[in-house]
Image (tube, rainbow, N blue to C red):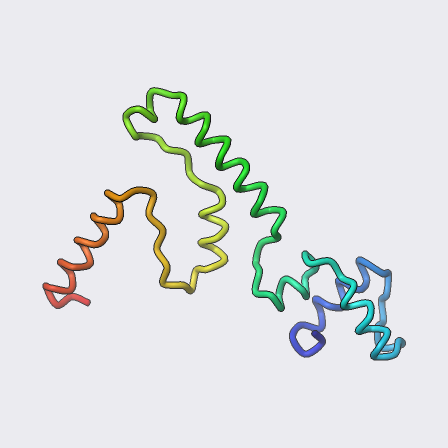
Length: 126
């Protein structure tokens, strides 16, 4: 943990245990405190590759589901327009911005993108 991000560990130890100079403690004591940090601590999130806490992801999912339920009761939903933007998608997209994964909201969106890629490849533009 120290090698990965010492500053994050220092902040987490200070915030959680009020330890401001971990160097005064034995290595086993620091390790014991580090293991006891919550999963949403800076260092544990960094080690697991998480950019957003699980609680935030769950709350965003709840808001998204609620907004879809409300939207489904409108005339716009019958026409398939003005669909609410999904917060969870934007959070996950930020988390995986280096990924080659593309998410589609409908089959039509998938087909449109697929055809664009095929046309670009056939034209030699990729």
